Length: 217
Image (cartoon, rainbow, N blue to C red):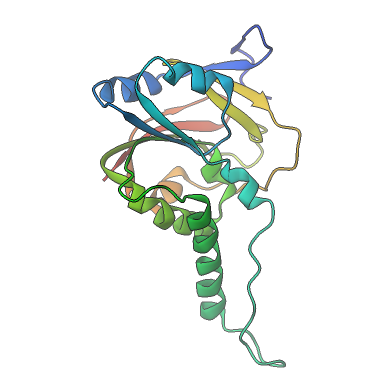
């Protein structure tokens, strides 16, 4: 379960207190229009939060693209052992093609804020590298990010739907439909694979998630 010390709103959604999001929002106060990428689905809280300012909000629902891993066709002749490097290269390219297809934005688009939520935990190293490469054309030197990184493999805190309720509050709802498997890794490995971003601040939560504020760099 999630941190039982957290509160619930009137709709029954759990509300996580966030110490890092207010600073990210404050840093972007002067950006107009504010360009935001949310890798989740368009929840009411996030739409309402950004609705009071000039903002272009993009939802990608990228979790759906992970339910079925990409299939690759082996070029190894029948009866021979597959070449590991060729297989890895082909699988990376398949992931890259899938993420590029999902991240089709207008040329010149540069996001100010990327809300990754817990998405990075569902990507193995190869898929994470492909995702970072697909996203790179749409980030700039001032792009900020927010993510929850899983540190313990036995933590039952994933398969959640997130929304930004207030600058210091994140709404969470359990998702009961099909969800991809997750990969627990040291947070330094996750962020090193997310090429183009570095961790500026982080807070360890009691539920096994590390809340991280990221900056392009």
